Image 1 (spheres, one colour):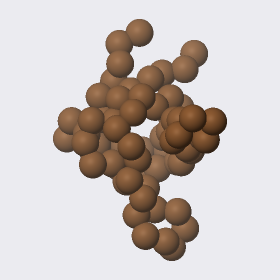
Image 2 (cartoon, helix red, strand yellow):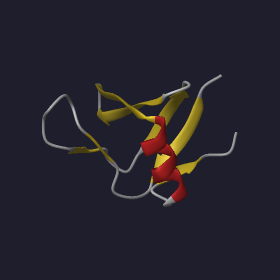
Image 3 (cartoon, helix red, strand yellow):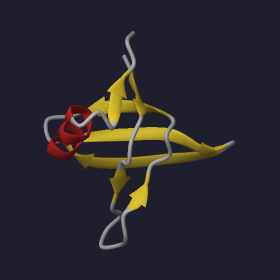
Image 4 (spheres, one colour):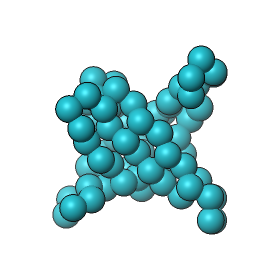
Length: 72
Protein backbone atom coordinates (compact mmCIF):
# COMPACT_ATOMS: atom_id res chain seq x y z
CA UNK A 1 0.00 0.00 0.00
CA UNK A 2 1.53 3.33 -1.01
CA UNK A 3 2.27 6.00 1.57
CA UNK A 4 2.07 9.68 0.76
CA UNK A 5 3.75 12.75 2.20
CA UNK A 6 3.96 16.45 1.40
CA UNK A 7 7.22 18.27 0.80
CA UNK A 8 6.85 21.32 3.04
CA UNK A 9 10.40 22.67 3.16
CA UNK A 10 13.75 22.65 1.40
CA UNK A 11 14.30 18.98 0.45
CA UNK A 12 17.08 18.08 -1.96
CA UNK A 13 18.69 15.03 -3.50
CA UNK A 14 22.04 14.67 -5.23
CA UNK A 15 22.18 12.61 -8.42
CA UNK A 16 25.56 10.87 -8.56
CA UNK A 17 28.31 13.41 -7.98
CA UNK A 18 26.19 16.31 -9.28
CA UNK A 19 24.82 19.38 -7.59
CA UNK A 20 21.84 19.06 -5.21
CA UNK A 21 18.43 19.30 -6.86
CA UNK A 22 15.40 20.64 -4.97
CA UNK A 23 12.25 18.52 -4.85
CA UNK A 24 9.24 20.78 -5.47
CA UNK A 25 6.73 21.33 -2.66
CA UNK A 26 4.25 18.73 -3.89
CA UNK A 27 2.71 15.46 -2.73
CA UNK A 28 5.13 12.55 -3.04
CA UNK A 29 4.65 8.81 -2.92
CA UNK A 30 7.06 7.24 -0.43
CA UNK A 31 8.37 3.67 -0.48
CA UNK A 32 10.51 2.82 2.54
CA UNK A 33 13.13 0.08 2.71
CA UNK A 34 15.62 -0.82 5.42
CA UNK A 35 18.19 1.74 4.25
CA UNK A 36 16.47 4.20 1.89
CA UNK A 37 13.31 6.08 1.01
CA UNK A 38 12.21 6.25 -2.61
CA UNK A 39 10.22 9.38 -3.43
CA UNK A 40 8.20 9.85 -6.61
CA UNK A 41 6.16 12.85 -7.72
CA UNK A 42 4.86 14.66 -10.78
CA UNK A 43 7.49 17.28 -11.61
CA UNK A 44 5.32 18.81 -14.34
CA UNK A 45 2.26 17.53 -16.20
CA UNK A 46 3.32 14.19 -17.67
CA UNK A 47 6.86 14.38 -16.26
CA UNK A 48 7.71 12.12 -13.33
CA UNK A 49 10.30 12.83 -10.67
CA UNK A 50 11.94 9.96 -8.82
CA UNK A 51 14.81 9.63 -6.38
CA UNK A 52 16.03 7.48 -3.53
CA UNK A 53 17.64 9.05 -0.48
CA UNK A 54 19.22 7.45 2.58
CA UNK A 55 16.67 6.61 5.27
CA UNK A 56 18.59 8.67 7.84
CA UNK A 57 18.33 11.75 5.59
CA UNK A 58 14.61 11.11 5.05
CA UNK A 59 14.07 10.80 8.82
CA UNK A 60 15.94 14.09 9.37
CA UNK A 61 13.65 15.83 6.84
CA UNK A 62 10.58 14.44 8.65
CA UNK A 63 11.90 15.40 12.09
CA UNK A 64 12.71 18.93 10.81
CA UNK A 65 9.16 19.31 9.42
CA UNK A 66 10.36 19.51 5.81
CA UNK A 67 8.44 16.34 4.91
CA UNK A 68 5.00 15.80 6.45
CA UNK A 69 3.14 12.51 6.31
CA UNK A 70 -0.36 12.66 4.83
CA UNK A 71 -2.76 10.61 6.97
CA UNK A 72 -4.37 7.67 5.22
